[in-house]
Length: 162
Image (cartoon, rainbow, N blue to C red; front, side, top):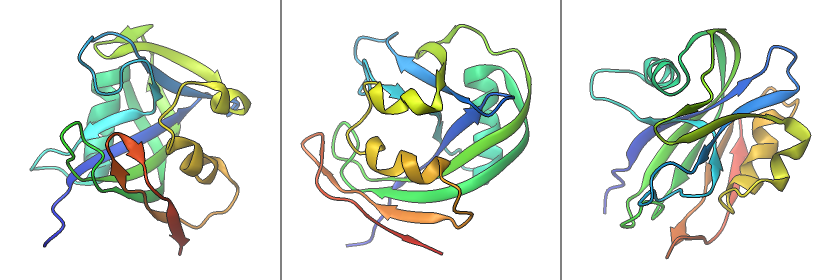
């Protein structure tokens, strides 16, 4: 059976001092699959855009910022992650240069600058705790992970680095 995932971006915007990361606390919509959790910013790619254009668009829509520089940190395949078991493939970026004024909230919830050393204390998806250290580590190589989900729970995690 061919793998036909939903393609998406996931971005982690660093503060100018590189000590904090912008997260959205998904607390605005009662029916949100991510309700109560903290996430990076991003979303589905549109048909006419590449992953960088998609990441730039999502950050402008969700945080009102313009990207000056970003780095691809990795990719993650999430079979079964969606509300109805849809498969997702995410391109994970760190945004280390941007302009604009971040609002206090967006349509999905409150936008918060979280100290990097406090990320693990937030209510996150269980799987985020496995890949977030790779997003922010000093290893310059990209990672490529596989994290299947079943019934809303992570089943396993494996990754490779190039």
